[in-house]
Image (cartoon, rainbow, N blue to C red; front, side, top):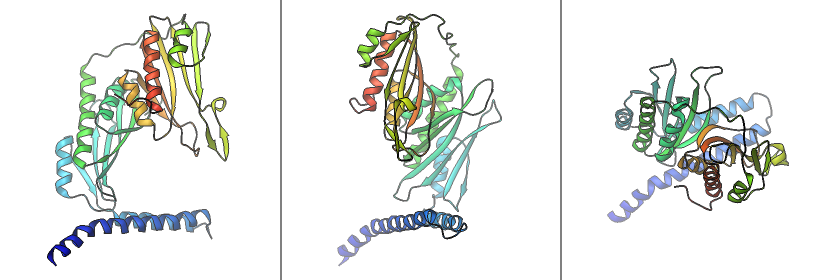
Length: 325
């Protein structure tokens, strides 16, 4: 009898978790139906408020011991919002009146969820990107923080799931990468080549593409199909991986833009950084397409054939032919 009771007790948390998930799925279906077929203009707001309140009521709290542990790992104190079960740590920069932040919440299915924004100078972006990805976290966006700023400030959106301590450790490593980048003397990149004489033949062979060379500059693209408003669109409408080589065969600059789905994004970023290609931006061009397309702009400098091999590696990783290093 005792063993049977213990067995039932062990099953109870899993059963409770399943009930919570089923409940939330049920509420989601109701809310979606009400939003699509509202009997009045007040219903969508009421429905959303009801759904948010229901979801927050199901999220367990973060224990104080876990909060203190994250503070110790990151090295900053945080604040807890019990109404949403969110623990948030703000990280101000010492050189600008701007702050990064990270927020942690329990996942309904177990474990922790982290989202945040890191405010970075241009020279810090790629070392931090490597640290974020190496720590098992995700990069969800990269864009300018301001317009006409000098020096240039960018916002990197990061996220991840796992234990709270592991997530906090990943953020700590990312902050350490900022400090390391600040200690290193900045490398001034040479200006974009004014005269180019790229031989496109070897690049075609490496990339398995057929590009064109105009005034010594090599260009090529690969289209991808997505659907927007029930209408397919592809390369000519901008859904394409594009690449350009300028300069000379021995001293070339490559600039390009990968088109990745949400499922491909993190491995594309890892592949680009593994080959020391620099990230410029991560953004959307359209909203509501299926599958969702995310555009990753990158650049690099070196021998043209080596740069082409780096790009080919990233393409192979994107489609699953290779695993990121």
